Image (tube, rainbow, N blue to C red; front, top):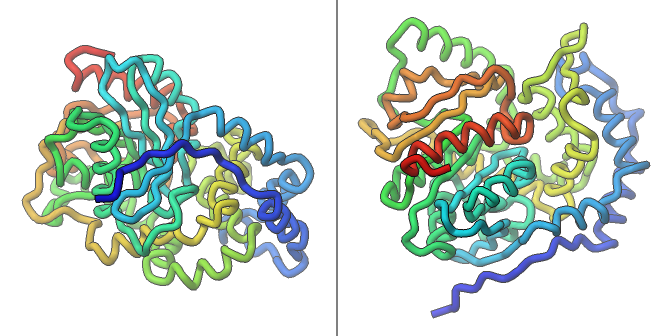
Length: 383
């Protein structure tokens, strides 16, 4: 039997790869890109130009790489898949934590909370999802249910039978939910900032449930064209993104502009720079472009479709204690608690006043405080 090895990993993008990326960034022909409607028709060109200008003149990947490598990175192979993860050790007095990001995010979303959680005593594990960042190459399309198995194996490899706690949003929430469904005995609890996978027979009943879910459907009709493309034709989209760093940056930047909880300018466009810096956004974007993961990171969407893993079977009720931080995501409107309780064992629920889809990145202090409260609840009073 092949030895199950876990190896230290250092981020090291070659000079040649970086030079190729920058040559394409500088060569982008803006004259071929008219601005149709600003942010009402997609990414705002003025904001994209600002980001690309910073990329060309001030962004220093070598300094970013040095900072990222201050955290302990590892690589392991699980069922033939190459999985990258951060593992910052606590003192072992608290339950291990698994923090799961989504698309188009990365392990960077948890940058501000990983050290405080380790200082609390937790071992903190933050993987790059299969196909994302340095979790590549992968053998093919992997959906959230298969990703859940890979994450379970990773945690078993690290901690044996010790029970652990998960936090997740976006795909991280999907994967955490499938982990709770398939191996509830492995978890002390899981904490979500997005609840969007339910038993297939769960239906809205109350007027408030019907109203909110109906309103969300209208928003999603406008905002989820990306999902249908990545779910059905990821490879065609990938041909363009693999060859155009500016195109990939635009595809990702649009989601930060539309999904984050941002103030609006007079014309209704998002004020990106009130919350994010160019450095933050480019670092996240480069974790897709630099390791050539921008294509494989989209495959999870088709994986969901092929697995049919967007719903649980009829009659499902997740027994694992569940916590929810309901941030006011402007696109994926928070699910009503009464509706979520038909599928999940909700023991903790917090209505947040601020913070959007990228909750841990946008509002790290709020996320940290809420996660600590949930941990205390499921750990018998421990922090």
